[in-house]
Image: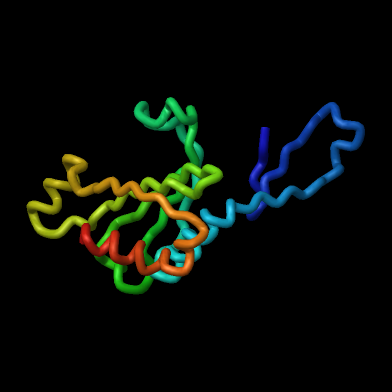
Length: 148
């Protein structure tokens, strides 16, 4: 099984010719996904967690599993206004379809009730391509602002 060592994952193969041999493999995001990650960083979001999980039923016709990126607002205009921002990306030859889940911070009794009933989350779906990268941070800020 894989073993996490710092920022690296090691996979040990017991029957390998040289079990101590280590070959490093760097996995980089698609350039359009990397552009989104940079836009989120510019807005003060910190990438907190990335995990693979079973896709919700309505997305399973595309893929059985998705990779979910979870961001926390660490600085900037959204700090204190949101609990988290989650993003899932579907990359195609035409661009990226992004699904965002915006989780608002509970305020007052109504906010606590909304949070308890999972009504404090909003799904936003949009597509973008290479020509949209320059304005991606502004577009993302506008989209998030609509739900704060």
